[in-house]
Amino acid sequence: MVRRVRDVTFICWGHVAFSLARQAATGDAGDVHEDTERCVRAVQSKDARFDGWFFVAVVTTGIYCRPSCPVVPPKAVNMRFYPSAAAAQTAGFRACKRCRPDASPGSPHWNVRADLVARAMRLIADGVVDRDGVPGLASRLGYSVRQVQRQVLAELGAGPLALARAQRAQTARLLIETSALPMSDVAFAAGFASVRAFNDTVREIFALAPTDLRARAARRHPPTTSGSLVLRLPFRVPLCPDNLFGHLAATAVPGVEEWRDGGYRRTLRLPHGHGVATLRPLPDHIECRLTLTDLRDLSTAITRCRWLLDLDADPVAVDDLLRTDPMLAVMVDKNPGRRVPRTVDASEFAVRAVLGQQVSTKAACTHAARLVAAHGEPVADPAGGLTHLFPDTTRLASLDPASLALPQARRNTLTTLVGALAGGEIGLGTGSDWQQARAQLAALPGFGPWTIETIAMRALGDPDAFVPTDLGIRRAARDVGLPSTAAGLTGHASAWRPWRAYAVQYLWATGDHAINRLPT
Image 1 (tube, one colour):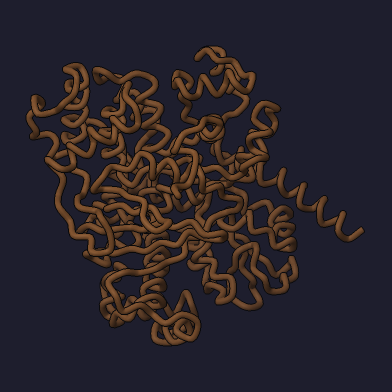
Image 2: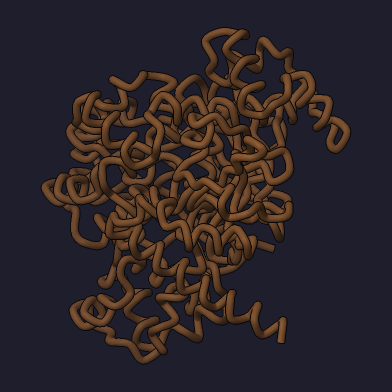
């Protein structure tokens, strides 16, 4: 009887997760934390799927936690719910030392939604406020500082500065616990203006001095003294690594990316320098090894690695919807939790998408490798075979089109794209407006639906991007009994919204191609 009750609770909460994610997709999930009954039930059932959707604070202890915190749940009357860790911190609560809510998977809201607050959150996570302040954030979004502050505060219970402060605190904690850096170096690498501000913030949020945090962590894992940091990137289960890492490895550009010793490695162009990331899939987390030329880029590097692997997705909600289509249900049940392989640099991916037009995966990698060898910035990689950063748009804008071993029409497409990106005429960055970016790309010569939707899916991160004209998708659709024409498939796929990009991953996975399996 007890087991059956638990099963029923699990099923009910699966529907709630699905409902919340659908609300997020339409912009109506900002008040999840205000639904007290739902939040209480999530906390009482310790459901990890709700980590990141909201945070629970306990007034009798002054602590805030994840919904899945393993301690005995408090009385409902003593619970308070917040939409972000920053909001809980602003209200005077400190992070739980047991469940570490500051290190939970990120909220799925900001990956699904395309509105102002979601775009702002993606930019804040990428470190824009730390680098350019709130005016820089507002400028990128195309709104006034007052509008941005008002909307972010109304939805998240904390303004952009408080959200950036919470992120700085988490970065500081990572450096304190995983490195042997002096605390003064940690403070400035994490983005604090002074050691005093660093000390005060760490004590306030974690209820421990920085030195105490390091001593506590050292009892479990000694800090590294090398130039690399090894981190655990959490995710919501399930996660199917096959197509995720298989796609990245199969399309890797020599010199920029490689698969080595069971991990995907690539170079990163970052605001203060460059780095190398090694990402290895493990059963309950992604092992992330970062080698950075400037530790101020730690938070940005982590955010971009999470974005690359789509780690803040809500796979339960996505798969529940896709299972409602009998044609997809078998694929989902076979390998649930597929993610969309993305990119760490949207401009780089747009260039590579053009190079890959109407050619094989191998040919596209060859074209990109030539571009890298001729125009990429050399880097050292003692731990592997990486040699270059992918060339930035400024450098590519100055290249001689005649040097490109491409058909004339594709040369024109590439040079026009690079010029528009270098001149700021097209925005494909983290906080871009998805529909506006589509319209800007469509105005360029040589950009059809396949290229635009591929960029929307993997560079912009639109979870509803769809490529019905893709030959592999049409073949997969035909083989499983779905309409195989672009128009017919588009009509049928309307029931998969807002997660058609994930349906694409399941369809692609039906083919016998290297992108669908982990390298051996």
